[in-house]
Length: 591
Image (cartoon, helix red, strand yellow):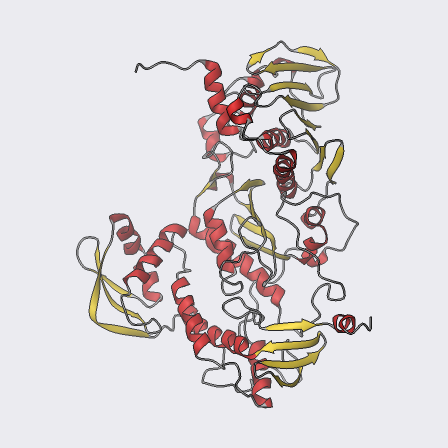
C-alpha cells in the first residue's frame, strides 16, 4: 500500500466526525459561537429529528461582509492569534473547525450583519461546495440554518434516532448552556411549539428555578472562595438520590465539562450520607484563571485538564460538604419542605427533562450563596453507653432534644412528637451515626491508635506508584501507616491502624496510593478506613429489639444534637421519619 494525501472533502468529513456527532452537536457549536459574539438573546429552532433543519439566531456582533467566507475555512478563527493565546483560552470555541466541519456534511446558510454595516451578507455552503456571498437585508446579529444534515453521509444518518430522542439531546444542550449563562435569554422551538423560554436574569437562583421548576428551591446552595478559585453551586439534600451520575453537572468558567476529579470530589462530600450505588444531583460552578485550566484537549470541548488538582479537589469537597452541613443545621427540627402537600417527582437531569417555560416570580433568598461553611463541631463524649451532655447551655433546645419522647415501639423505634409533628427514630441507626462520628473524629484529628507488626510486610511497587508513595509518606503516617524505604521501589510496612482487621494490609496501602495519584495528593485518604469504621459502628452499638429506658432514649437524642449529619446513618439509611400534622390528618381523612 502506498502513502497518499487524502482529498480535501474527505479530510473535512473526517474532521466533521470528531465535532458533529448528532444534531445536538450542531446546536452546541452554533450556540457557543453566538455566546462568543456577545449575544444576549439566542433562539434555537429544530425540525423533526434535527437532520432536516436547525436554525440558530442571535443578536451578537455579527460577521463583516468581507470575513464571512473566512468563517468557513478550516483553522480560521477570531478567538486566538498566537501560541500564547492557547494557554489562556477565554472563549467557548477556539479550534476554528465548527462551521467548516458542519458545512462539509450539510447545507449551511449564514445571514449576518454587524452594527457598523448598513446591510448584511448571505453565504451558502452545500456539502463542502462554497458559493459566493451576496448582500442581504437583516437585523444586527447572525442566523445560521443547517439543512439536510448527513444527507451525503448515509453511514452516520442511519444512526440518527427518533425526533423525540434527538430533541431530548438538543434540549439537554440548551438547558446546560442556559444554566451556565443566566444573563442570556434562550428560546427553543420544535415542530412549531415553544419548548423553552428562559428569560435573562441577574441571579443564578432564578435560572435554576426556570430550568428545574419548583424543585429548584429544594436544592442546597454552597459557596467557597480560595485565592483565585471560586466554587459555587447547588446540591440535593440527602437522602434524596439517583441511580447514576447523570444528574451531576459541572461548569468550568461557563463551559459544561465532564471531569472524573470533580465528580469524585462531589461524591466524597456525600460520604456516609447516601446508600451505596446512589448518587446526588449537583450543579457545580467553578471560576478560576484561564491559565489554570487547559480546554484544548477534546474536539467536543467537554474535557479539560487542571493545574493544582489537589487544591481544586479539596475546595470542591469543602464547598459541597459545607453546604450540606449548613443545610443540616443544629436548631430544632421543622416540618420537611412541602410537608403539607403530596411530594412531587424530582426533575430530570438538566436538559434531559421536558424543558419548560419560566415559572412565576419567587423568593430565592434561601438559595443565595454565602451560607456558613464551617459550623461548630463539638467534641464528642467518650466512653460507652449514653450520658446526658452538659455542653449545651441550660434551656437551649437542640434539633432532637427539643422533641418529646413518648416511648419505644416495636423494640426498634423511638416515638417522639414536637414542632415537626410525629417523629420515628431508628435507635440502631441513630447510635450507629453517633459511634461512627466519634471514631471519625479520632481519625480526622490524627489520634489513630497503631499496632506494630511482628513481621513487616514488604510492598513492591511500579516506579510511578513508588514515586507517589515517596512524596506522600508523611500523609500515610498521619493516617496510621508507618512505611520505610527498603530498596529500589520497595517499602517495608511496619505499623498499621489498630481498627483494621488482621491480615494482609498491602492492598489497603495500594488503594490509598492509587487515590493519591488520582487526586493529585489530597489529604482525603480514608475511604478504606471509613468502610471499616462503618462496620465497627454497626456491630458495636445498640441493636434492634433492645429495650431502652426513658433516660437512655433522651440521652441518645442529646448525642444526635452533637453529631454531624445526624439524619442518616453511615450507610446512608435514614435515622428518622417525620409525619406532619397535615399528613396525619389526610391519612385519617380529617383534612
